[in-house]
Amino acid sequence: MDTSRRDTLRDLRHRLEGSPAQSRRLDFIFPTLRTARQRRGEAPRGVDAGAWATTAYNDELEDRYGTITSALHPEVVLEAVFERGELRVLADGATIINGIFVGPVEGPFIAAQWNARLDSFNPPTNNPGRALVNLLRKLIVTENQALRDQVIALELQQRTMKVTIAQREAALNNQLYGLYGLTDAERRMIEQG
Image 1 (cartoon, one colour):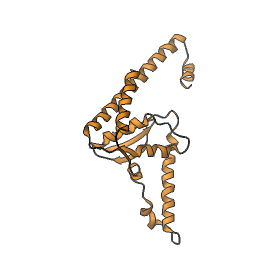
Image 2 (tube, rainbow, N blue to C red; image 1 turned 180 degrees about the vertical axis):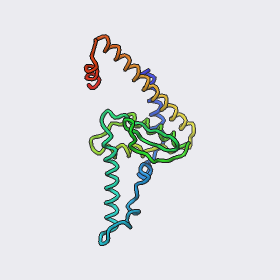
Image 3 (cartoon, one colour; image 1 turned 90 degrees about the horizontal axis):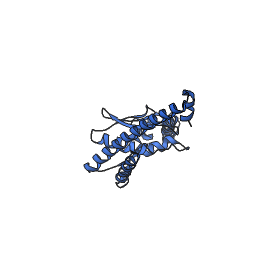
Image 4 (spheres, rainbow, N blue to C red; image 1 turned 135 degrees about the horizontal axis):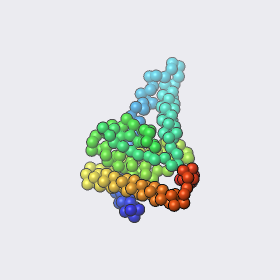
């Protein structure tokens, strides 16, 4: 099973890395984030409106990165979902990015790309929220429906295998814990490393 998943991941990476990608604008990830230009009219009187608006924009952007960062830790489980026309990113089951509305053709393809990248994302120590957002902004741009279908299918296949492997490992661990007569506290200590 591990070998099959490795081969599936290799095939998926080959398709993702062999296709041209572009970075989407920040307002794709944060559709409600108003630009500095949109904020100029809100500047207090007597203040340089451009500088004030840029600062307000940057502050809100850093707040959003900070909110995402607060949900990230070394063992975080990240997942992209596309439901009812909306793309969302979950961290340990809690939504950290949402409000990205796309069509039924584009949505599953973006979610598959995101999940493939999220699977290997390790939060860096310096501004992990920004790193995650920049990772999500990079998307393949293609009209090749076969490539789209293959990426979606391979990502689903590898995710299914990952769940199966985790279930088998948990069952094996439970058998070993039983053989050694470990208590629940001892089991938790082993699982936490």
